[in-house]
Length: 129
Image (tube, rainbow, N blue to C red; front, side):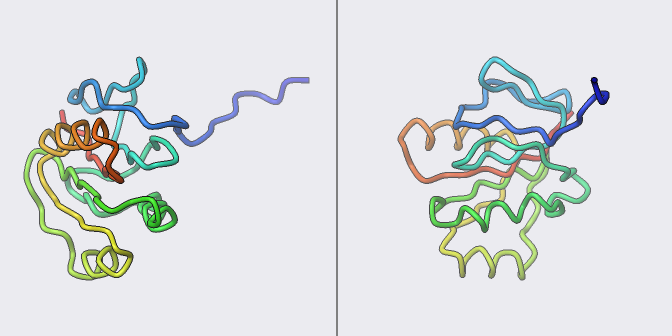
């Protein structure tokens, strides 16, 4: 017997370029996602960060779980560039990850180029309207 609707965390199990962004979400792999996303070697995940709090969200822990496969983290902080908190910058550095905060648009474009080059890149992308 059916137990009702099962709600699972948003996850696309693969690497894919970002086809479009804006209107509060992203398009990739012929799909769309409303809200922020993390693009990691293990896939693309829904993420609860916002432009007001770009460095929040439990899923940021996944970056550290996959640190062996990541050398560059592009951090799209929304429309405006926000500096990384010193503790987060230090933790990323200790994990061997170079992190560059930039606008989400710049992060999307750079991610797509680095992904096409086969580089060990990940992206934390805050959705913009």
